[in-house]
Image 1 (cartoon, rainbow, N blue to C red):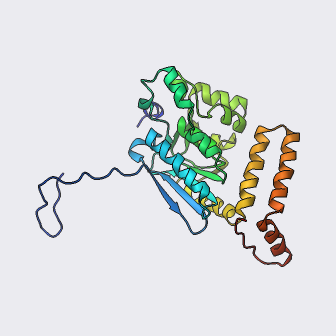
Image 2 (cartoon, rainbow, N blue to C red):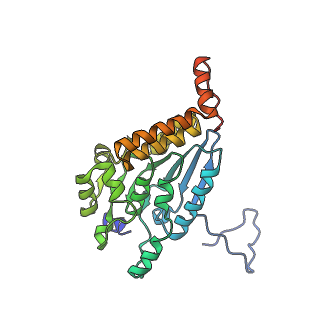
Length: 288
């Protein structure tokens, strides 16, 4: 598969010897576009599972992911989410261009009036880690940018490719990207449509962690585990405090940080953590 294409997007026998039935059969249900595993260590693993389409974000995937993240937000078993793509070639190779090719500008504006997957992930109250390999293009990059941490292996290739089809990023690929890597790098990425290789993506701060090929999910799960052992209240409030740093002037952010600290301080988990430290034992956090 070429960069340009990726950026722009028998009869068997029964084993017992019986003859297969020849009458009409029920059609097989299509495979779901993603899989969920909720682990015992409070980590939810979301696997985008359309490898034949390079895990592209069509409407079914986007709607399903939004509903899934809504459920995970209310699931007390889950403290951290890891999201990754199946197959060898891609994390997510963009949106499905065929879905919006025939829309008018007003029709697209109407689509934008509804909640989108990018805001759903960015606003999710628990930490989200993206484990990235292969192509991470357009909407796939914007999905990664909406996550809190990005772990990539050395095959990761990043591109905001919208410029190649006469458009520009519309899901955070200018705003979140510029806040993450700075104005100059964001301009180069968004206005050239070029690929950024994994080492460079790590150097400029797009990838927070760079690992050897095929190790991205293992590393993401390790980092998630180091978060998920702590109080879900502290995780939620800490994520909010860090987000405030990007969205508030310093004085407002510091004031909000104090209030978030006081909320954690007044929680049962906060009291438990302090007691456990004094008593030299492992804390038992219950999310209260």
